[in-house]
Image (cartoon, rainbow, N blue to C red; front, side, top):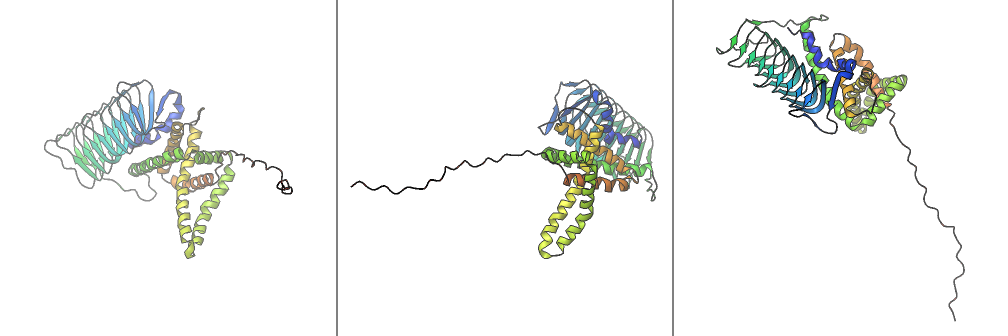
Length: 386
């Protein structure tokens, strides 16, 4: 059985990577929008693939981790565990061990095969393949099809069971309405509802943790999508903010306190007059932008502290550190009571680092204008010859 706590691995795998960074094969889509693992290509080590769009048709001999900002297309084979995180994911290949997958849109086609257990999280999940072990699914809309070799546990707002579906174990569901079971559907065990118990204030329960993990998983993915262009198009700003946070934390703290606490007063003062309304709108937009980007800077700082490696700061390495830092922040924020403790310090430090970023610059020597010839007083005009 896959316990709800094991879903932490979907977001925490980058946190585990630094301890065994030497054993990972890291591949990123530097300079392109698509990372491809061609058919016939083999990954012999435990591998981590990063890119906006990832297309996998090759083979992995050990565990495979895939993180994409936009989409994942998997048509290959994995001899170890398969872990995926993306906005949209289509699995059309083979996983010899367990599967952990997260995506707003997640599909397991009729050709997909998972020989182990499966943990699936997302907005819309469609499963039409074969899963030999137990499965745990959390989504808004779930469509079940194909073959299931163990017990299927589903929590969703809407559950559909396709005709011809075969489930060897129990079907345990949590939904407002019971799923409609066609006569062609075979369930080897029992079809049992499980009531979702709403936790009272201050109460900690697995149901509440599952919901918070799903919500913060979405927020993690959204922050990563914003962080990609931020570190890609503004490397000087992000690098300068990180340098300021690491070298001058007290200076960053003072700047951040002044910005976070004084920003609303400055916006209100500008809005008091009619001519200041456009300025107030601009300042409010800038204030919200700095607030959101602040946690990306802190995530970069946390990621650099976790993943310490020498060499040039390529886009792939920076993105890996950003993802690791964001994973730490969002996993911590999903725990009860932690968000209220982390929110203000992260906003203050991040905003102070952004506004006090020390941008690298070079002095350009402006050449002096060329010297003017000395002024000579003109002599008397020449007399024309008589």
